[in-house]
Image (cartoon, rainbow, N blue to C red; front, side, top):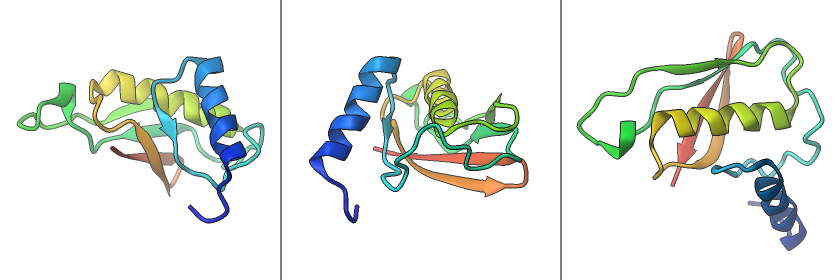
Length: 110
């Protein structure tokens, strides 16, 4: 969390309230949520989570299309929707987005 200020946390919290997100954005290096970071990405995928908070269930791969030229805000919106769809309310901190071809792979923490 190098160079993260109280103003950064305040701005992210305001975005959570404004957009009704249930997730928390922890990729603090992102400052411009209108920027298009990966114009080639067409999907966000989520596969490592606790389905409905049940450790004994195997998660299905969840995926949402985001089309080309998605902004960071569009990506956050897709991640938030996937976290809600998973039912995993324990892991709601967006910590990693790994690029694999035309997909961003979402990894969350708690």
